[in-house]
Amino acid sequence: MRMWMRCRGWSALCGCSILKGTLVSASGPFRIQAAAYTAYTRLAEVGKLETPKSSGKYETGQLLLHRVFGYRGVILFPWAARVYDRDLADRRRDGGATNGTSQTPDGLAAASAAKEVKGRTHTFYQVLIDSRDGPFIRAQTEAVTFLGSQESSRSLYAIPGLDYVAHEDIIPYTSSEKAPVQHELFDKFLMHSPDSDPPFMAQETLRAWQKKNHPWLELSDVHRESTEGVRVTVIPFYMGCRESQTTAVYWWRYCIRLENLGPLWVQLRERHWRIFSLSGTLETVRGRGVVGQEPRLSRVQPAFQYSSHVSLQAPSGHMWGTFRMEREDGYTFDCRIPPFSLESKPDDGPSSTSEST
Image (cartoon, rainbow, N blue to C red):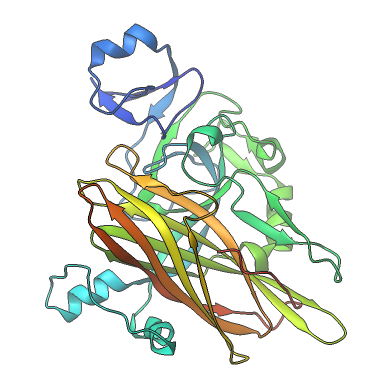
């Protein structure tokens, strides 16, 4: 199957469709007729789709389309993560059926409830996002952040155009271009090797970068839960610790993806977080939207992803909460954020943040 793109780049924001065996994107809705594409869209062939893998894993250098956000990218390396899916736990508990509305008690019981869900190993991938697609996707393209390199520094810095992608969200494709993905790190991390499969191999700089930044890049736990047809996925990352003469502050970042699985659009109106620290503090945070936005999730644009940071004056803690959602028919409900642990690593130095949920 040949794959075509708009010349401005792939746009998940605008939607995509399969027309006569050809994958295209356009600046109209999903249901636009085939004839309408030729009226105002110029298409360019960029590659050929491959059959997604039902087993095994993809290798470094594999080109991909993101199944949900639609951007082009390339795999840097895989991670084995533990996925704690509360929907699966509910189905087992309810004999195979769940409506996704089980109640999670407030307080510390909500945080410790994460331990009741058995984790299963699943493959995720660190990927580079094509910079041409970044402006069009509903996901932050600077989700990977680091602490400043100096021990006394409290600054954060970000590497743009990196993402973590679940195996099932990858649509593989091939291209004859030597640099099919535009990203400032593409040539530094990958080299064209036409006799290899995939035809891109890791440079030594990629292996060195992965080893050097392993504690801050490592993906270990993924948490999922659905409420009223809205699924929330949370991926926490320990970033490190910063020490002063009197205190040690530990930093984490976390990536959150919201996905509407129902037919009616829903809009995120408010957030409500509970943050427990091993030091004994319990903080409540409320506010409008997330990262300055109130994203609407519809059938055309079903998902939104963002990242934020939190700090504790203790080496571990928990977070949980809710998003207040408003549905197309006027119904409002609290969508649960699955409880997740904030755990530090003893072989890393200390860290800090103001909570910016």
